[in-house]
Amino acid sequence: MDPIEHDSEIASYGFEHARDILLVISAETGRIVDANLAALATYRYPRAELLQKTIFELRAADPGLVAEQMRRADTEGILFESVHQRADGSTFPVEVSSRGQTIRGVRMLLSVVRDISARRRQESERDLMIDTTRRALALRDEFLAIASHELRSPVTNVKLKLQRIVQQLDRSGAAADGSLAAAAREALGENDRLATLISALLDARSLAPTVELARAPMDIAELVQDVAAQLRERAQIAGSQLVVAVPPITGTWDRLRLEQVFANLMTNALKYGQGQPIHVRGSTDGARAIVEVRDHGIGISAGDVERVFEKFERAVPSAYGGFGLGLYIARQLVEAHAGRIVLESAPGEGTTVRVELPR
Image 1 (cartoon, rainbow, N blue to C red):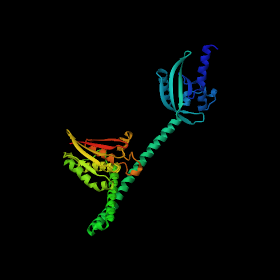
Image 2: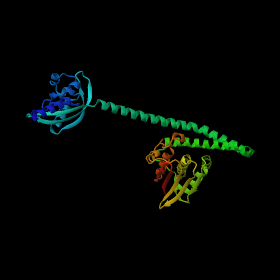
Image 3: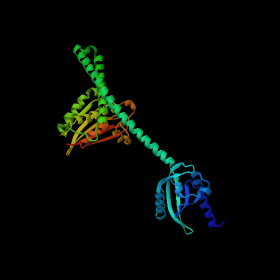
Image 4: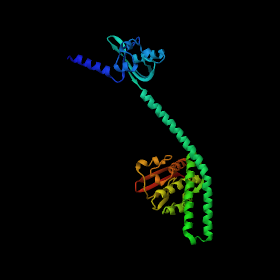
């Protein structure tokens, strides 16, 4: 076989059996000059009938737009999306790549037409999924806000009753039944933990992108000591202790917000520290105050370091409890002070969280 005839046969076979629709169109009149098998199957016309059609009849679009796109295809080539029409009147979305070419002295448009129905379905399903997810998140946040508000009242009442029980046991001589007094104090600690979780839910729901701060001069060492004192019973329950070594560091900060930051960090350290001592150290670096909270517990992998700062994200087994909000809230509040929070950790080697705050 002559090489030229062989190449022509290959080209003809490729044209006929291509998966996409291939059309050869008269650049002057828009008449379909040739079409492959995919075109016949998709448009559902016999070949003789399809070759009597023009591109204007296959397009579900304004003829003026079609003519303009033909002109651009002839002069510079064009890629666009449109809607084509089958013999039965049904339509389908397409992506068209068309370019002009002179064939035997006549200008033709060589068009590759791809049916993008599947792509559009996927995009529609993706958009629906995104919309459904957004609505679900909005409903979840609304539920958390309502549930948190509703839970606060009974938790406060339980705390008051437990405090009264502890006081009565102390007055009546708790030594006579030390186990009962210890159980009451442990229940009080768990109640405080529940109150903290509820507050975290409220903060995560209502925390705005821009946090309003009530700044005032303060000593961060005093603040850290106060937080450690508040968590003393929780540390005892965890079989750990908070070792604080923070020198006096003065600055202008929002005390309540920073109290929340360090309470979250120390609570996390106690939860994941496996009963080992928790070290809280402070220092200054020029105009910055630096406080580090270090535990020697389970740690997390490097790949989870950034993720744990997102809302409702955790990098530990569910058995540890919690909502995955502590670090999220801490970062928001530290960054509101124009500071930064850095976490360093490794599995089995513990975690260090460093807070840097402009003074």
